Length: 331
Image 1 (spheres, one colour):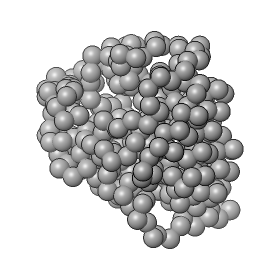
Image 2: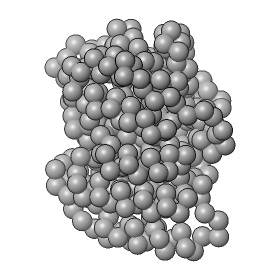
Image 3: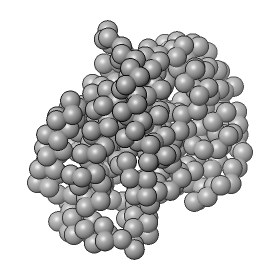
Image 4: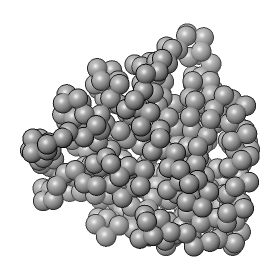
C-alpha cells in the first residue's frame, strides 16, 4: 500500500452528506482506504486516489485546533467518516487518527466511528478515559474468514473485530454492530447470520443495524471482480434482476437497490432471527427511504448524547471463554 503525504487545503471539519448526521461535523483523515472493500462506494469518488494508494493529510491536528478555536459553539461529537476507515492498517494513518481523537476527547468533544479495522490497544486506553464520549460501531457481516477476505481483502479478521467489541465493553463502552451490507445469496443466509448473531448476542450486543447492498457502477464492477469465480455471483445477479432505482442523499445520488418486497421480507426474517439471541435490529432510513421513514440511526446517535444507562457488565471468565472459543478459528 502506497501512502502519499499531502497538506489539507480545505477545512478539516465538514458537513456530513448523511441525513442522520446532518447536525454533526464529519472528518476524513485520508482520501482512499487501505481496506479495499469490494462494496465501498468511496472508490467511485472524484478524489479517490486509486486502488493501492492512500492520501494522508499531514496538517490535520493543527488545522482542527484552529477551526475549533474559531467556533462559537463546540460540536457535541465529530464523526470519522467511514469512506476512509479511521483504523486502516497503516501506521501513519493510525498515528494521525490517534492525534485527532485525543485532541477532540481532551476538549470534551465526542468521537464516533464505524470501522472494519483492528482497534490498537493505545486507542482502547484512550477511550477508557473518555468512555462516555466514544460512540463505536463495528461493521461485520460474517464470521467466515475466507468469505470476509473475498469481499474485504485488507480489513480486520472477524476474530479481531470481536476482540474490538470485547475491549470496548470491558472499558464501559457501548458498541453497536452494523451488518452492512447484506449481500443476497452470500452473507444473508440463515446459517451465516445465525452463527454471527449467536456470537454477538453472547458478547452482550443489543442493537444491530441491518442494510442490504445497493449498487453503483463502481460497486457493481468491484463486486463482480471479487466474486467472479464463485457461485454467489449468479445469486447476486438474480436478486438484482428486479432491482429498483432509488434516490439517496436527498435525491442527489441514485443507486440500484433490491426490490422493496424482497428487502421487507428479508429484514423481517433477519429481525426475528436476531430476536432469538436478544438482539434488536434497525434499518437505516437513509439507505432504505422506502421502508424506514425515521432515521433510526439518528435516534441511536442521540441516545449517546442523552444516555443515562447502565454500563455493560464486565465479562465473567466463563463468558469470555465461551466467546473466545466460538471465534478462535476466525483469527
